[in-house]
Length: 581
Ligand code: ADP
Ligand code: TPW
Ligand code: MG
Image (cartoon, rainbow, N blue to C red; front, side, top):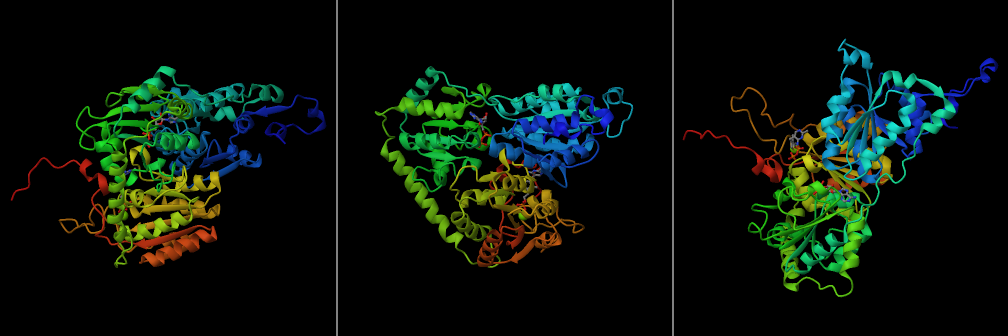
């Protein structure tokens, strides 16, 4: 039964009247018509009934404990599926709680739509103090790709269609859709309502690159002595996995994956230069960027991570033309969607393609092997207390044995070391803090990863990182999701050993020592584990993942093992005041 039929009046006198629908049902029908089956949100005025009705109409409605995590879930659902993830919130405070996730989605180029109920326009605009009054549309606008408000039930179909198109087309991003309370109860003729809905045709149209752009890019690539491909999360998002693999293998060009592009080709691929990243960036003469921006994560394409100024030529594939020359000159811009651009490059390479000089391949291979060999003994350490490397050595094996599991990862040392140590084998299996390095994505990403893919999820969380979304373990237990959380518990942020020089309070970076995060999971009916060695960690995670039930492993890590800000300590400003000797 469609939602429209639901409020058809049934008493005999009224049966003669036309069938009616309302704003609630039109929103649900518009989403369903566009293949959107899941809503992530937190209920309350004025959207409580919207969630209830959506559930009654067969949509999956996942209720969180805080909107930020519902928003993060929606954002990563968008990344995983190429359909905008939907986050539903109440007005003012709920909207603001969801806004961080919307801004983060926009920054990371994930398609999502934040739908918030809002107060009465007349009262908001005269600032007369309505319940949860706020001009939400104005506030959302600078933080997302597009923002729309629907005032009439007859415009819901168009409003939802515009939101979907804005989120998915071109560079994906976050969209805000403002739905004032009054809209939901507006009634209109059911048939007219049905006709007002729009099924968005081809929401992310292919954007073909210009043939000259492809020819230029191939000329530059051919001239390279030490070429490199950098795969970014845009390449993972594009779901052009086979074409990207074919491009790497046909060209014979080594590649470095950005964090969330790991696994697009297996990290163990012979052309992966991931374990020789520094050498690869520094010594390459031509770099082909595929869905990766030259932002801080690539040292803006200049400086000490790279060779002498001007010694590296960049080719960039991106759907966003304004991304070109954002930090340094792009000698061969290739504007278009990644699937089309990569295919065009492949076609252009043809049969006569020359593989890159073998000394370059050998240089990277030997650097990679040396780095892997240097790391290996650290990963096998049985030192007590356990350090990051030993714990990650155990998890590395688990992921190798379970390549279809999704890895969610946040923290500082916990993030940086896991990214380097845990090999990924399949596309879109590594989800993390992204472009902002934001803490708090953990539980939201984990929930959506489980809901959208049905695959097991392993969450590797710093103890601080986990705290940002830890209450959502209740959500995980409530929906019985196959999520195993491992908290790397080193008693604090970066380390657990700092002290307040005055001796009055705990240091700003430390937590209650020896906390038992496993008991949070037990509080809601999940399984908790407390482990202190790599062997215990392995056993606990395997047992948890075999069970498919919610679990949290409190992994005790040496509080002295971490370094300040993980591997980005150099970004910390230093005091200009010299200490007296
Ligand atoms: P990373 O952090 O992994 O380096 P970024 O988020 O910086 O990746 O870059 C992703 C880039 O991918 C963005 O510039 C975005 O415009 C681009 N992008 C996303 N989807 C596509 C697509 N389908 N085709 C082309 N470019 C895309
Ligand atoms: C929204 C700043 C970066 S990393 C981090 C914080 C608070 C936590 C590091 O401690 P953790 O990891 O998780 O215990 P570990 O292994 O090094 O001990 N607020 C937001 N985002 C960021 N990035 C911060 C604060 C930060
Ligand atoms: Mg910590």
